Length: 486
Ligand code: TYD
Ligand code: MG
Image (cartoon, rainbow, N blue to C red):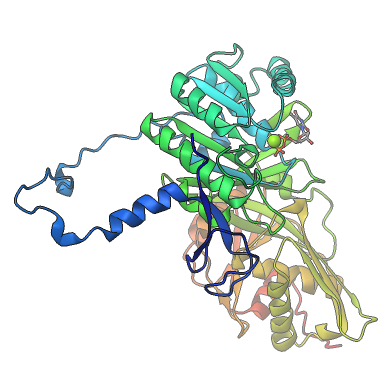
């Protein structure tokens, strides 16, 4: 067989060269040349160049499109992954023939999650696990370790149901794409797991495993077979230094769902999110905890993000929403006199720009001289809160720390802060209040006009509605923080 010819294609302008350059000679962009097999490109070019008029018009060819009314609807037969938390993020389970990319930092627990899930699924469907990073021996060791968890607390783990026996689980430790494809065609499994896509290697490409060209070719070849034989394909992808999934845009448009697995390396909980999902909602959150014998599901995540400590000055509790999932989260602020020319501001778990903005609003509308103070803010439990609904909680934590006040116990705050100091309504408020009430909170400070006073009373929550941040602070702290201006 002749060696296939590869070309370098600029991902910005599409110019092709035979040789690799750091800079595209067509558009001048740096580092945009990506190696590609020429065969595929040449074929499409030839097709495109064929003159349209040569097509014989006399014989009508068979119709390939059809009216949408007659398109058959096949109900999605989802396969339960064995984990409620994973199913929730997938939108209700794994869809046959779908392509799912699971991204995350190395060591976060991607292999553990998928191996555990594969164990659970193997009792009900055929599973092929391709380990391109670890040897078969290593996977077996992990398998044993996970089995011990199921033995230890079998009935506590719903995932363990039916997974005691190995079921139909095939393991292949291989990095050569060709052999993986052959195995996939021979076994035609219901589920195939590729751990990881970066470690697979297409011998026809000269570039190194893990390069954009390799990742793209390997994923595309696997996807073609998987779609054809209705295999659900789970690809593991590492996050690169730049924080993107390697071969970032290339893989994201190819797959049906992109899940990210994240967490603090110093904390045991792990968060699973859907960034893209063709078969379900995005922004759903799954919560796991890494134990010494594998990942356990956390069905009450709010308890994880509550500090659990005695109320102290500078702490405030908010109810954040991840997808349809409310999470009660504790915020801590520390405000202290600065010894720098420009005060220090640092935020963990919240965008620092958001903190700057809230400090400016407090300075302007409450008259607090915060520009002379350092301000540190942290979200307990290592969670990232992106929602503006956290604003009011941040403001309360900052003001409480500045005035050395403790918020009355059992208080939660929800609300977005406008630049004019007004409170803006937030979505899913009732859901948030329900979660707060479930965890024993008794007071909630929220934006005005919710119409939820009755519902809150039914939940045992005292509802304080406020129109501005100043009103909200008075409601939350019981005193006017602007009273004796420093
Ligand atoms: P791993 O699944 O290998 O991560 P990834 O595939 O994302 O690179 O898991 C990595 C870490 O998890 C590893 O440092 C050990 C830890 N771990 C546990 O704490 N308990 C366990 O039962 C297992 C299997 C792993
Ligand atoms: Mg791994």
